[in-house]
Length: 328
Image 1 (spheres, one colour):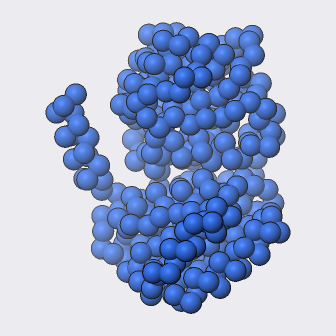
Image 2 (spheres, rainbow, N blue to C red):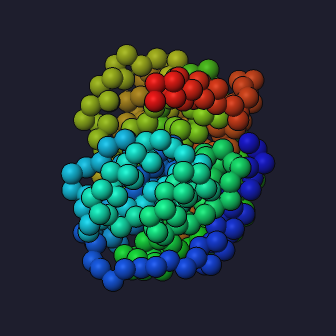
């Protein structure tokens, strides 16, 4: 896993090269909404992209992470099926339902059933390199999603053009990021952890949680400010030194939320001193998001090693899939 994390900036570059070579057939129609069907490592890419573009997109962006689809999906919906393996059963089920509604569909995967589905129905399809754990293929997911939205004239090229500078930015800060990641592990190991972020960076906190779960084999949760100030904050009445907190802080934080972060830290510090803040660097939302993601990716790897875990294994997930297959 360490090698895969190290190669993440290079993956962004490779994914840009793939995106620049694609030739999609774009219908001349107006879309009323965008839906991405995807789970796990593919689904989180959609969440990250949706938050990057929330101030640019003029139509709703929804993520479906289930077998079924919302009623609003119809012929005016652009549906992107994102499954790294191409075999995610929930995604394939949802796409079949979208097909029945007459939606415009495009697939992104390394192959599998999704590739065959798109070929059989003459849908646009983007193939990315296979052979990785889905959680290590985030670069392929986010770059292609942005390229699809640009190709369908739903966003400008500005976001896509930031990927190469962001890759260089991550490489320039890798040593610093690794050191911060080691500090994170020193704080959170042998605790129950929670990650707090400002609402516009919720997807980053979710990605961090997922990485700590999968790579670190470590139970944690996440929440966002200001929402957690209206509910979860009271839960800290039962907090203790067995708990730890990671605060994700950015320079574009709303002034009121910046104060909320300060007060929240003050409140939880009465229950535990296992608190660490990660201050994002970067000149825009993409760089700040990717900086935090890269810190937590490295932290998840170091945590798994510190806990003597096999960082890459997913036996419990494979068991679940195997049991479900028996009842298919």
